[in-house]
Amino acid sequence: MKMTRFGLIAAAAAVAVTGAAHARDTVKIAGSSTVLPYARIVAKNFGEENPEYKTVVESGGSSAGIKEFCKGVGTQYIDIANSSRAMKSSEVKACASKGVTDIIEIKFGYDGIVFAYDAKGPKIEFEPIDIYRALAKEIVKDGKIIANPNKTMKDVQGEYPAWKIAFFVPASNHGTREVFEVKVLEKGCKDLGDYDVFKKEAEAKGLKGKKAKKAAFKRCVSMRTDGSVTEIAGDYTETLAGIKGNKTGFGVFGLAFYENNKDTLRVAPVSGVVPTAAAVASGKYPVSRPLYFYVKKAHLGVIKGMKEYVEFFISEAMTGPKSPTVAYGLVAAPKAEREATRAKFAKESK
Image (spheres, rainbow, N blue to C red):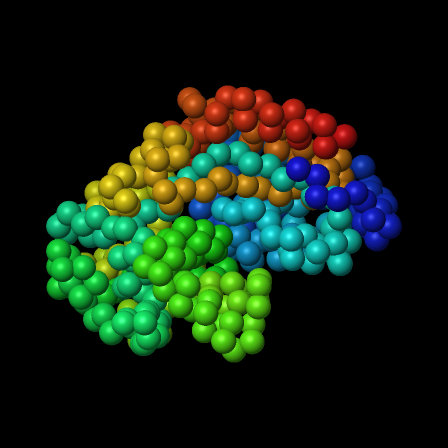
């Protein structure tokens, strides 16, 4: 989706960039740790088939990658931002303020967010309300807002083991965190009715409409700070290390990472659905999301191999049902959607 048309700043910057036939011979990519393995698989295959082109793929998280992407137009800035969530309107504005005014959004497949723990642990199933009860900084009891009193998983739900609550969750620099907040914490908060209580309190303080809703959402997704929650700023390998060090802890992972580490991890179904590629593709698994990358149009034709890399990434060979990214764990988009993505890039990259 084309975000906006070229502005004068971007046009001027693009002229500066195009001083040479190719201002840089390496495509620079950064962002989501969820998208990272797929981008690296594509980059590896792209380099093997096209040795004249070079790519560098780094992580850092969706928000961090988009922030770098939005810093400006020119060879000192990255060309593509990987993201496990859609770019926010505030980020589009931040980009525009730095002259990055023509952005091509590519949605290339799907992934699920899973809750996993030590492979030798007992069978455990979650509902969003259970995770909310475990992690929320405050909950509502008998109509009153109180500090979360739950200390063990058994306190959360009587059928769970009496494990001390310990979750390893992605930090705010990750797109996974934002999806987790909306589809799990906010959902659980609303299912319990706590959201309504938080909203009423906000309204009693004079907040109205969107401001009251925003305040209620913030209360729903605010997690405890008593050591029960560890925020992971790095990639999923750090989360896995946390689980290895705490055999009764739970980690938030992308489905593909879990599937490639089944020897050490056991996954918890959510709302009765086991996370699988088929369940994500059908929409049955409730905690799933599309995956994206964002292309800086001003760099196309200027950075050697950039357009070719994007075309290679969205080809059937790389993201179709029989591709290496799907073999790794990506959930392929439906055929019509894949074809529409290729047609969209062909049109918007002109």
